[in-house]
Image 1 (cartoon, rainbow, N blue to C red):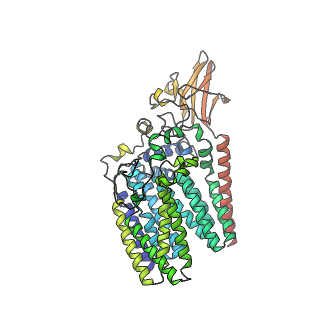
Image 2 (cartoon, helix red, strand yellow; image 1 turned 30 degrees about the horizontal axis):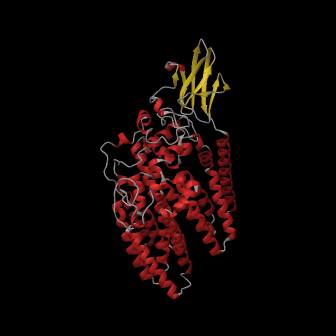
Length: 552
């Protein structure tokens, strides 16, 4: 009976957060490039470009190292769905839906391991139905951030399992760490310090020093698995235009601090973030979370008065979580300006309110642990029911402003649409020196000059090109490729140095005569080391699994 009630409650949470995603169509969000990213990911893998790093059609048809810098995990799943279904709309819907499913399940298991089934259901509802998650999914379209929140929850679960000496806790922590890093680099950057403080608090309370070592190396293994993405994304970003694209004008963090009243104001809009308190987008914590905080305060006060030893772990967990949640909320306000200006990496976060991703997790933990600390079962069940019902009312936020009549026009998989329409929306990682204003959109050319016939193009894959040319004089051959570290040119199988045009395209001087000119996107030294670390980490993971299976 209990299992049935829990299953129904979790299904209710999932439907409350996902019902519009079951619609046959789709809706407009601020970031509507997901279909193009999924299509480009699928094309790259189909051409044998693994791991996929280069996008053929972003960069106005000249290419861009999109997945070298933009966290790829949601698009791996989206690409599989697109390959199986052939529907780009269904593929986009699936990665939105999966963000909710992962959050519902992960938060439930985290809550259950800490507080039991009742706490698991309450924690799942509190995190999944937080209004900020609705903002991410149905207004901003920040699906990667939603995946980052889900992975953060699973990381906390992995930590708890390790500290409880569960056999496969290390595996959950390793995979969730890798999942977080591969889902959203900015959420990773802001969540990990809070995770470290939370882990330190639990370890010190439990005096679990041996488990702390296991947790550390489990997390390190996860970092190793994700190294193929993390290391190049960090060390090679200077080869792109990213800083000039995402750190100026609208994206300057100074313009996007929140005011405390915005946390308690139930305004809801589908616009954007602006300077001041009058954003046309909501940062409301939600009635359920606010009510839960009040009830938690009362519960903690009662526990302090009664001095119940049995409730002590829950009380301490609630206090620790509340402190971390409050600190995350504090980071969204201008009171922390000195930190934002002194810690240079924070400028990449762009929007201080992104710390709400961290805040909703720890505030939800504080609420759940506070309520389950109550000694009276009747009061505990009653308050859980009340807060759960209020949280379910947040379903009204989990809906789009309107459905599109022809969603496939906005979420298009067509190569020409990606080159013409999506490239200007997502120019963040154009290579240094690439001048899109000096170049026409490239829809089909492999070589810009001199003009070649179609029969001269022998290979045209995302990561490699091969053309046959015949020149009477030495000639500069200009490929329709944005030059970027990793592109290597061969003439008749022999590697040669190549140049770059003033517009940023890859060029090579070809001697007179008949030649085959090949271009391949190969790993740089950083990428080669990163790939090696990931391969070694995966080997260690599977070796540990085999070892544990043999020990049974």
